[in-house]
Image (cartoon, rainbow, N blue to C red):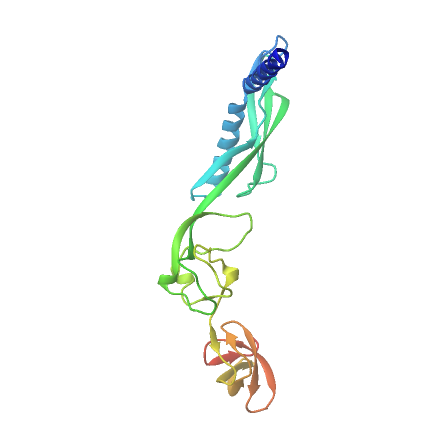
Length: 248
């Protein structure tokens, strides 16, 4: 039993010693490579480069830069050190962005350090203030502004109320859902059987005739319409609740 307890104590001491040594792992200079650049220097260089590019791109939204994978440090020979930083693949919001750092000693490239960083950008977006059912035109009571992180997908979001008011969602959405462009539709303004004016441009002259809708339609959508004069079914674009157009 004493032997077992002693073995447990030895193993415990080994675990704590190992953890402590791992936590204190530091790259130290050697006689051949007397200079050391630590991880914090790489993070600062990468962050400064990213901030510079963001400013050049006109980025004014709140953002956060985090280090994801950065080397612990580098040993260098004696001499004057300078750095060149660049972003080989461009900035990727919400995803991993590579920042490469060339380390020069006495004007000559000695090594290259590759840092993986993450840039999170935030914007006040329009979201659903409560659960919203399809085909209900949005009012100011249906929306609210919330600061959200811009996602990996290039979905178009809205920051102005006038851009969404009057539109409808194409599916039921829950409270807090970001109202992206692809889930918003124009409301139905023409129902089947409604009389409409058909507008067309013939040799530079605009002509009109009467017709009857054969399907429901939203502004900008193409629908089937019966031409009351020719008795033929045509495809026309919805201009407003009373007008459709051919050739637009």
